[in-house]
Image (cartoon, rainbow, N blue to C red; front, top):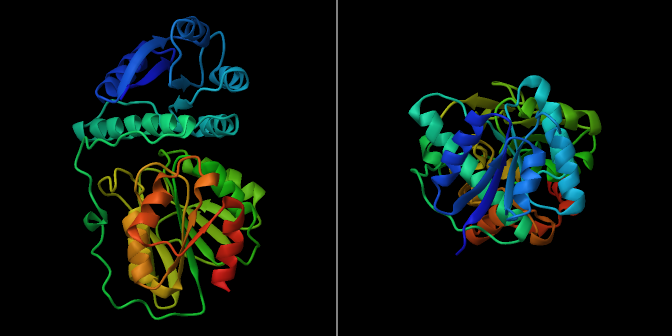
Length: 353
């Protein structure tokens, strides 16, 4: 199978070299060229058209957002924005997603061997997901590091499910394409919707801005989850980037635990971690939703929720950017309903009634 051809556009020579080294380490990816700005990139593209472009936001001569708009309107190519994601830059990154970028990755940083390795895994997977999303095919999967399960964060739930109560909790997992899917889903929910906890695969320092933007357009309150936040009606909590988020229960009170830990199913936060905790502490009181995304994060956890008595919904293939995560959850046998994106909110409200 031919390799995924990648063009790297960034004004920093160090970043260009680091990204090139990271991506070239994956046998499924080939870096065909690098460019210091969009004008040089356009010259490179006259010779060979890439499958995926990684694009910086702030560059001389032409900024990344302007180039992104030109690309998407003239000759759409999967674009992954590469940003340092400082607080002030997060809103720009959100604009990039609105303009058609497939995903966001954090610029590589110097650090420990573990940090560099984890960054490599996430960057390569993001580029492969982008290629799959745009060309409507799934990239082959290659294990490049130990793939931990939710066992590293929490033991499997016992066969005894939580006693059913009148209060429901909705748990949601999403990845590639999920930022727009979650916007559609949350904007359809009324103010008195049962409490929601969400894992969206997203870099650190990005989830706060994402939550703030959703909060401005939704009837429910949306915020980045903080440790010990109570899960209450009318509020959606979004797991912070680079932290696992678990659902816990003390008496009648549901709350979240936000903590460090290794990558689970190649992600942090991991949908599997959230879903396992929901199976253990919520059981029959849970409505689970798995949305668009590449890979299988959430599939095992959703089966555990199903076995504990939860009712689960998967987004259908036609409305997914990438059908990987819902497809794997369906294969595992943890899905009770399959629905198009526009129907998921109504199904959640019906199941929560």
